[in-house]
Amino acid sequence: MNHSMYRTARDARVSHGSFVRPPIAGLGITRHSASIAAAALVLGTARVCGGAEERANEAFLSAVRLYEDCHWEFAFERFASLADQGHVPAAKLVLLMLRYGSPLYGTNFTAKPEQVARWAQRVLRATPLPTASPNAITASA
Image 1 (cartoon, rainbow, N blue to C red):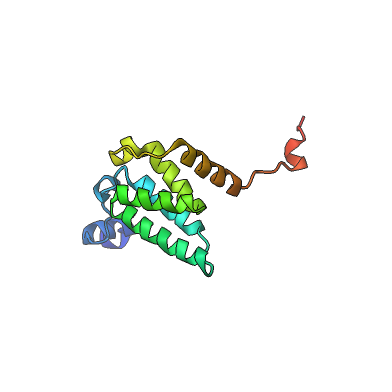
Image 2: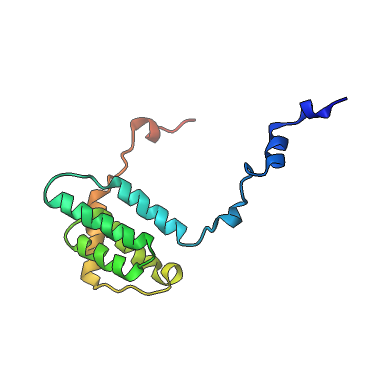
């Protein structure tokens, strides 16, 4: 009896070797991956418009590239400058970098308390509040 016709697709992948995926531990995932993912998420929310907003978004993309290349201090400075100009995605990232500086980036970023308060207010104002629907409030008995 020829058992080769009973081989599964998984057996075929293993026998060819080139289709076998490496284990997750072998992918080089680091603790910075979460931050880079956060940067990508915030980057995806940035709108591209004309004029000053377009220049701010270009500066934001430049800061994201610095961030992705692990130039944390330079990226922080650029994000902080943009956040001071009212760029909300940059404000979100600079607040995250402040919060997780030491454990994630190996450095402590600094900002004046009034800057942090201003950035947080901008982020809060730009974040839509969830609204309750009447169905969500009604208790089911």
